[in-house]
Image (cartoon, rainbow, N blue to C red; front, side, top):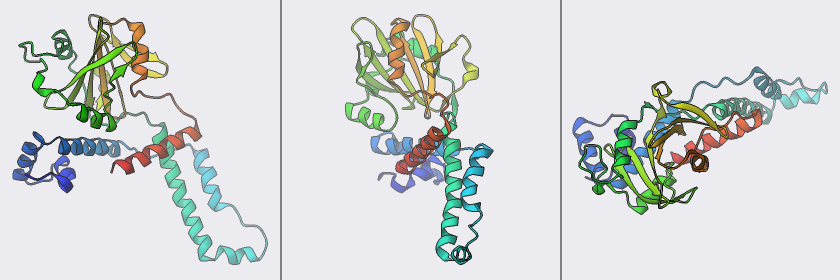
Length: 287
């Protein structure tokens, strides 16, 4: 079968004919390029679907609306200028700008929680960690046949799924694997003494299912921690759920978390508008 091409969106939306959907699934099993396109389309759809109606503060709308509604000076010639096509077009642009800035304000202040809620299978992650991510004879082990190549990890990294070769504290990446029908990226790290595994899933963290975890604030990032052997940290940002399992001590993990995407503290009005415009521009580029 040829590459999905223009049918990627129809496949993600489930709008292909049943036979075409089956052929597409079979093609995705062997085509990394199309799997990449499907992941990008799903992420874009999640982001667009999560945008709520913007509700900026009344003071912001009032100040922006005042640009178009300000009364004209008393000079007689001004009335003729107001009737000109140039000025009428300019007022329209101001009105459109109000809508764009209002949407940017809402997006810039919205928490980065986009996608379907997921509950990471923590106990299965622990079993995989205890098995060192190798084929250990259990149903949850990560087989060597699912290894992710270096070029694919670079593509994932560019698509918003971090695959850093090095993490703070001297951790070096030993490899990466697919898990759960290629829905989970698993990255294994070591410093020669301690081990760390990073699991990445598409979606947002279901915070109602974190019994036994303690919420922590690490330099503005909201992280949930479960002490034990191994220690588990989990959080979400920009449509990806991150879960870290490690036998390293807690004090070393702050710098590790800082290397990965996290939610940011509440921004001021100007920063919120700027952040919102940046997010809108990134969606256009992704499309």
